[in-house]
Length: 222
Ligand code: SF4
Ligand code: SF4
Image (cartoon, rainbow, N blue to C red; front, side, top):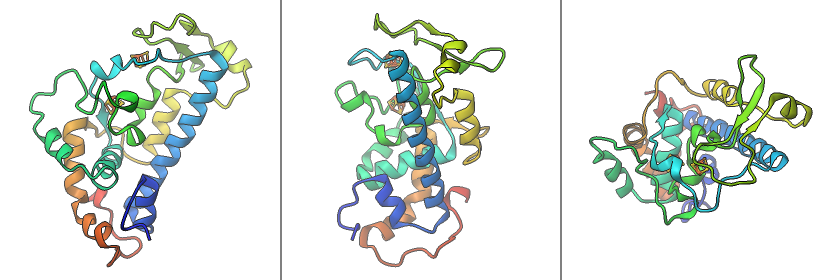
């Protein structure tokens, strides 16, 4: 039984299996998994890495999230971390500053929703973009002071590596197959709204009974 101690996002998906929201989360987690593996292969091949302890990108950035990305982060906060006070904190962010409200300098990876973080958070500084011919090229993040990380990796070298390497644009298109990428909102607002849509699931996840019927209309689409 998973109801007593739900530990991971995969457990949550299993718990509400057959619902639309579970299939959205599973699709997103599958995309993230593929992306993380491909980016790791790229980073290993070209010695691309962030300096230890750096989180400067999160200190100067608040991501715009799709509905699905926000929903996964809300699920992680509510059902995995079980910290609804974080939703209150996000709701109190009136005038978003330049720092992501989920950034903590003293936490693992500096992100308190790391396993659920959004697409752009996974791509930034770790994935090739495209040149004007739509070929993959990599430019080092301007905050990256790691001397052994190349400033630029040209398309020819990436292509010759024969690695299964996708670009940021490709991942954006893959995300669009899961959720609308034209209708995004800043992280605080998007996650608060997503959390409100997920509250009804708490009853199922708390006692494990009265599971929603398969193909229950999606809370995400309501
Ligand atoms: S969600 Fe996490 S990784 Fe993304 S900007 Fe915020 S702190 Fe950084
Ligand atoms: S992407 Fe840039 S700013 Fe972000 S952690 Fe890496 S080096 Fe630092």
